[in-house]
Image 1: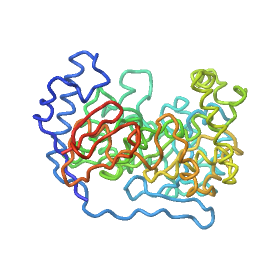
Image 2: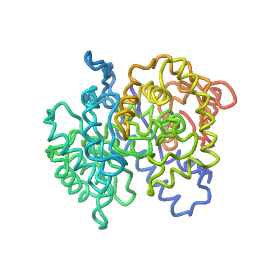
Image 3: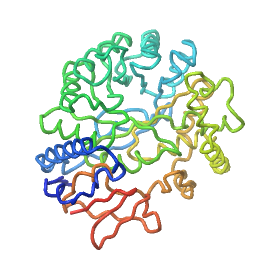
Image 4: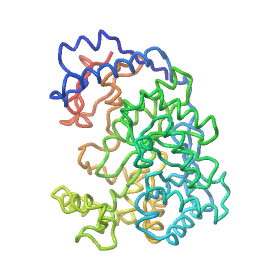
Length: 447
């Protein structure tokens, strides 16, 4: 499929004062609006200059299953890196909630179950999570080539130069992570959040540099918008640099819009996959908070009072009621509610891997059992469950709303078929007659 993106200044100026790019921010100061418009215009011009940038023929990326462990492996986005569809994360647990002995036990169970992906970050437990992860790998003597180790950069220290995505911090921060991990390289280095204080070209050049220096194999983004990912890709293509291959995003039954609405187009058109985290919504979907907050749970920690407040809030009580409706479905499928939630995340074709954050061996073993859950039946059984976004898993717009805010797609791209009904498939509506669309209050024009 060939896709070209074009956005002329005439398109941007012809809006006659109607701020379609920032319709939800009409009260924003004029200088902020103008700066956003200028940035979008720059990205659109870069994308237009690229012409046709999607390969005409895509390689069929197939999922494989290990015979001994039953673990499934997928490509990370549309790169050649094969990762286990379930990975082990270290947020909150390593260096904080659990002891080093429990951490070693968790990694051993995961590795022996076929998990090859282990994720951490320089900010987790102020770097201690990386130290524990690296020490366990060295102690176990696992072949480095059999592992996929990822880390994230942004918050590295208290000094002004020890945070952000400047070239200085990306290079120095990654060197620090490698020292703590006792590794020569990481497989994927993530930008842990966007940095408005650093030019996108500087970020992409720094990521390309650390890859060319052998400090990382790939780079990705975390909590970036679709527009920011597209900008990074456009800059990389323009200057012959390395684009991101993956976005880390929160994804579970109560948080769906980004992965199901914004990221699919990036996956199909530029090959950016999704590595999702918090499949159990910080433990909410596990059902353990149905009768309050247990003392040994994550929400009981002093630094996670925000989670406790969310659980006891009105919205939290509504979520607990929704979970009661899902429990009978899990029973009919012969799995637990956490296994159902993880299997539900895996059914998304753009999801390369789901990161698990277990704090006990029992939890990890249970979550790994999602591989054996009937994933083919999950979409059918949950077809009537819409969650906060009021949309079904297979009925989402075929175009990324964030990208369409500032670019127009050429006529070689088919007109999206919007779902019937009041919500138009994903909270939006459109007509084929005038070829316009409206998603969540933001409007744009096709062709």
